[in-house]
Length: 134
Image 1 (cartoon, rainbow, N blue to C red):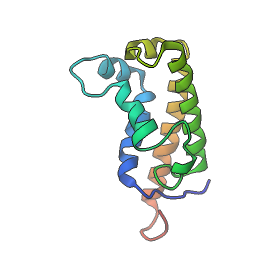
Image 2 (cartoon, rainbow, N blue to C red):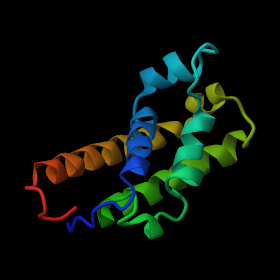
Image 3 (cartoon, rainbow, N blue to C red):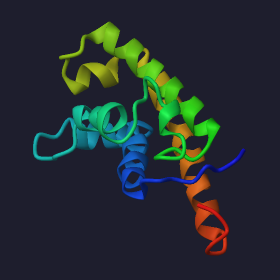
């Protein structure tokens, strides 16, 4: 798949860890459910839907913070899966309700695949000789 590069590398530095957090149930339990930690599901959702991408409509982010069409497709799937859970538990539900929802497993599975693709694409881009594209 063609790598369109990324116009905003700093956005990517926020986006990849947010996807990794969604892909890691142990992180969700140990960090999101611990009141002493700064990261919550709300923070991750803000990164994915508001600040550095729009998981509901990720196509405009191709070449900005998403590298490939595959990343766009998986991000859209992630946004859809998250929307199913949000509809089931309610927007203002606590993080614990989200991660215990039956449909949460789909969020984790899609996020894991997206994280794998994003990290692989970043490693491939880093391995390219300087000046040979983004």
